[in-house]
Length: 439
Image (cartoon, rainbow, N blue to C red; front, side, top):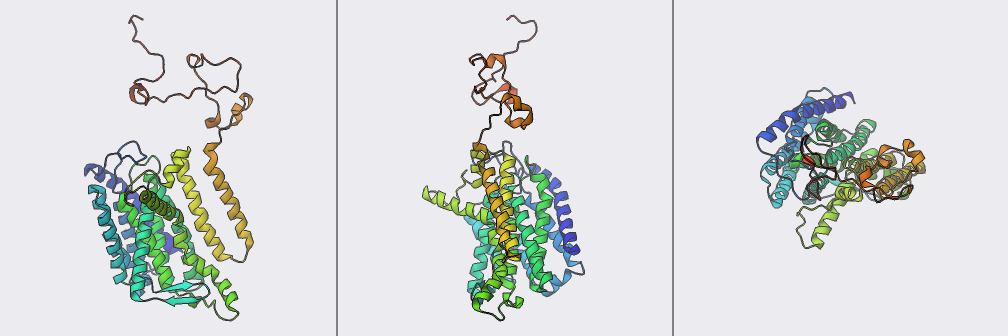
């Protein structure tokens, strides 16, 4: 564990230190596109954050290769080299897209080629675990198609959710943390060496996200761009492929003795987490499916960008930018760690009670902007400032009746630069005159 933590920390530190110079490079190279209709930010922000994340990936793998407990991963498996090859290709395409805005079909083709590069070097699905049946072998072509499909789906799911400051990096970090715990349990608890590469990939991915998040939290100083979102999506997919397609559930000896029903029930802790890579991106995947259906229904291309994503809807409901991000974090953590807990104690029904309670809490948080608390005047000092009644200037309350505590105050219009507002040339404040000028 100490070796994994050291690799994680080195990856995070390198990513964090590289992000500052990368931001200056992005500004100097003009990688600051104009604000689009679907964007949430108000000012042009540099991209190319994926350059720093790729540097952290290389540093993490390099450090792991020189550690006594982890260098066996590179000696016994070609998966780290396969990951680095595919990541370099997808990162290069992402950098070009951040600078020149490549066509969506070109990026899709590059994603499939990157997945093919990993398949050629051995990072592919060899068999599938099916509850009640056991391990089912698949042909080389079937494994290749499944690998490419999983890589493309994961990359685009992460790319679709990258719409708010810190959202994609935080959600992938949470997913990777849950996946790391499960993979480490298989490797250390059951002695399955084939789970070691997936554990390493998850640790490096956590470091990449943690190192980039301080620069990307709202208000973001730099965006990861497609060079970053596609990169972390590919690393997450590589972890899933490594542990799902390479780890044989038969090595856990869960099918020995007992009836088929008992064997299937005993294998649930294994089968469910093997689908963990899909559950931890359940929210991005749902957003991807809904976006395809929505755009196709309107007669548009599935790759046409819009403002109908889940994070956009949270903002429309009334959530602030930060609250919308943390709500997405909450649901990602609930799905990922809930699945992880059930995999460890599947026979205990007590696991479902906190999951149900937390789900109810999540629903309350989602609907919170719909409720407008009206605290009485005597309770103003006991409620948070955002729920207190605003004090309105006398010239704005001329039409209100005196003594009516339930009367709604007029919403102040926020002034912009030099007092300009969205509905008029000046803000609704008394016009100031220079000293000495006639009234």
